[in-house]
Length: 198
Length: 198
DNA sequence: TTCAATTTGTTGAATGCTCATTCAATTTTG
DNA sequence: CAAAATTGAATGAGCATTCAACAAATTGAA
Image 1 (tube, rainbow over the protein chains, first blue to last red):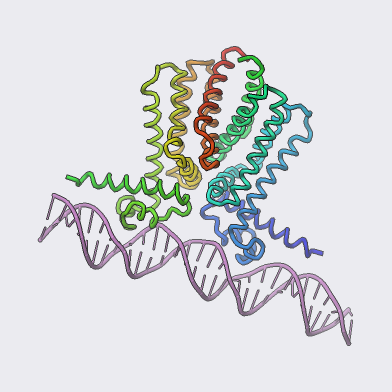
Image 2: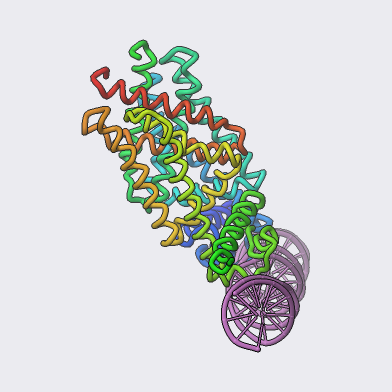
């Protein structure tokens, strides 16, 4: 019965171990040996299921990105379907991972850095960035003049990234709650200002 | 005559070479060998002047941070001494490095990542962050109610970091000019909104 | 059911590579 | 010639990858 199950179980074990090791020891010293140890499997298994270390790292980033997508959907599920609420849900989702795993921002940052020298990771990163941007623009379009939409979306995206970075650098000491609050404050400001108040 | 000069010349040669190599090959593969090659010196010289690779990396980050400080001073020099102009000068300075060296954002990002697992680099990073924040707060205090100052400063700082990150990820394709413009737009919005308009 | 045969899953020692560091030898400077 | 500066081959540590050997699960014939 476990024929098809074993493979996905092992893959997830290794991805979880990778995240754990990167959080604990940093990307540079996340070796196959440590990852295998953390997963209670052997070093050889990595090549078997992922073809090598690089494959495991890419799968791990894919997992992080899809988790984020999942968080966005979950965050939107129980809320009123208004443009403003949708924007707030996106902000919440982008910081919900930090709350559960206080140090996961470290992992993101490591992947961003790594992505700059790996075409595959870079591609993943871009897809995600575009999705966030077009998501934001879709809702902003319903709240302000068309010519303000793109720049506002870019600013929100930059804000999210900036606070993530801060969260990563501060060893978890910056409160995600605060970052969320400041992002939301900016969104309300932007809606207000771009409706003739400025 | 060159007794005291040689040391500082060699140090700067090696720091320049380090920046060049990181920009070209990435932080991970910036080896002593490549750095020595780029500086046209030998591998042994690194230990001689910096005690080892880690020492060279720290010195390089110190150099980047002091360059940024220098850019801030320069940027402020020829402008009216009003709070708003000072804020704009800070924004300009934070993106002037990107303009001259299109890929230096990569180096910053690499150092940020590295800093998270090196107490010395982390300390440098924190000092710099505090300086930026208190700088911003000093001028914002003259432009808005006291209770808005800290959060506005944090938002501006996050915006700057966020756009830097974007610049780094986009392989230099995001225009620093645009980032500067959006930061400035936010500052003017914040000044406006926090003076009773919202 | 029982037990080999076969397939599937897993191990970890051996291999070979990259790299930082060291330091005796060499060159340059004063 | 003494001191300072520089070299780069030698060393050894750390690491990813490989693969022959082992273990577990599955099958099917008796």
